[in-house]
Length: 352
Image (cartoon, rainbow, N blue to C red; front, top):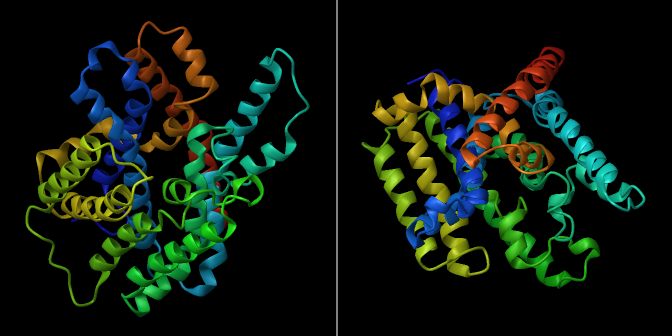
């Protein structure tokens, strides 16, 4: 077992999550994948985002478990330093490229631009799929950061908060969705499907599953992990995804929400517990140099795998594999040039 906050296998799993999302978006175009079973598997690649959210909940709770109320502002600023610099650079570039390359440039969409750079877009059904397409998930991530410390304090005081908080967020959000009935400006909270697919309250249980894993590791009563939890959790996740693929379930159906938003995060948390506590060939693979390299640059890769950079690279690439390799290299450059130095500077400026 590694020290708290240092889990190389979880860095490697970030690379896998980013690749799942990439294959989900572009795999259906690959001739070799034109088979019903292959396409069904690819269709579930969107759950790489679920993996990101559970990971985020665990790592934030594990690393900042003991932070007091006096450290709240430093925590928020440190997370902003991790999330925002690269996102802002790429968002500004995305809007400028769209503006300059338009055949008939319209006035600069300032309101839309502000919704993107402030990370508010993910609250609105009419705005979430603008700018950097994958950036919608950063709205949920940022919302979690804003409430993460109160959540951790609540869980430290009483473990029932692990269940009470997401239930309250889901029920409160659904009440708002039904009350507004789609009439809110710019589709705020949207429909029930949008609520569970995109917004932080609808997906809060994914973060809380990770917080729950951190609580289990930090529990004073001692935590004895389930034996073979890597494989039990992995098989549970595979079974859930096979079910949603076979019956084409998504965030529209009640059963799809139950499986994707509530049961899958528990399977992922169990799987991550195994990666932390058990030695296995999978853990060794995830801790290998290439996976560590890809994992560290996974945030940059996630942001650029759709948009003008992908379009430019893919237009000059012979196939999707070469495009993938080029994107990984470009993501590493962005990580070293922007993401890491900005994150390190903010951490040094606002220590905990």
